[in-house]
View (cartoon, rainbow, N blue to C red):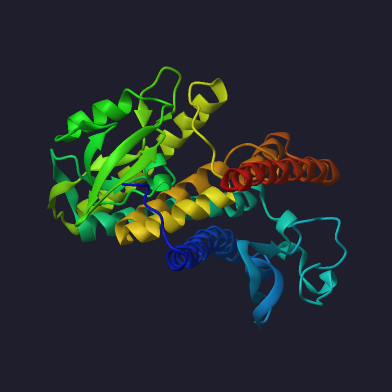
Amino acid sequence: MGKKRNGKGGDAKVLVVTLLAFVVVLGLLVFVHEFGHFIVAKSVGIFVEEFSLGLGPLIWKRKTKETQYSLRVLPLGGYCKMAGDNPHDDKITGTTDTDRTTIPQERLFYAKKVRQRSAVVAAGPIMNFLVAALIFTVMFGAFGIPTELSDEAIIGEISPGGPAAQAGLLPGDKILMVNGEVVSAWDELAQKIRSKPNQEITLDVARGLKQFQITVLPRQERPDGPGLIGIVPKIEARERIPFFKAIEFGFLQTFYLIKAILVGLYEIITGKLIGPIAGPVGIAQMTGQAARFGLESLLNLTAVLSVNLGVLNLLPFPALDGGRLVFLGVEGLRRKPIDPEREGLVHFIGFALLMLLVLFITFREVVGLL
């Protein structure tokens, strides 16, 4: 028995599923985030010049009285361009030809009160949290909550991006042996995996009528921690819950996830957590894997990514929404605006550093695929 491999046709199908899922999920998360900025900006009377999904060359546009709605070729971002976001512009620099003199002063972003601008900036991450809570609510309402797990060594769910997913394991796979030793119960399987951190193990797997071997490297996420490959046992029973209970669970799940991400970030900074950081390539792989695992897995990953996007954008780092909120907070305490040139320079440097970090992570991911 050898390691299971996909043929060329299978590889092409996996690539198509991965790219399609990645574009849909990323497009949804970016749209939600930017729509948060957009809807609050409109509500406080800010002139929104362009609302775009995607970056780069224009594919489609529709112009209303004051706002252009755009779809651009690269589904890797988006933006909500507001008049007066840069006080030094003499004209609106987006896709309209309107002179700034035709826009009332009170409709410019920098002319609004601090609390109004803060609401606009914070609305993007908040929308990400709300959409995550909505997705979790739908999941709890549609699929119910697990009430009983199987004792058999059968994989129920797989964490996208984890060692098991990367090795090619799928939900429903039954593990027969670990390093040639027979396993019959989930606890036995878990113990053997946990005892081999950062050591390759060979799993004998049964998938339907087929049997094959797969090599997996259990990941150690904390110094002296156990080996983990990102699997959970098969769910034997679920309980359907009322609609309002699903809403409660959806918001609680979002809250606990926000807390877990913040704790994880703290542990990464302090060196207590050594798990890898996923970049664009890693996120695309996880999205493709989740799509192949099923709708529930894809919905769960989308909610998790949405919460991650919201938390990361609220970090007090220049160029992020959190960094802008820090400057607005300082302005509110000083009761006078901060020099826009200095603030702009800080945000520019922060953006450059973020892009360098993304490029570095992406480079490492691409090299790891070769």
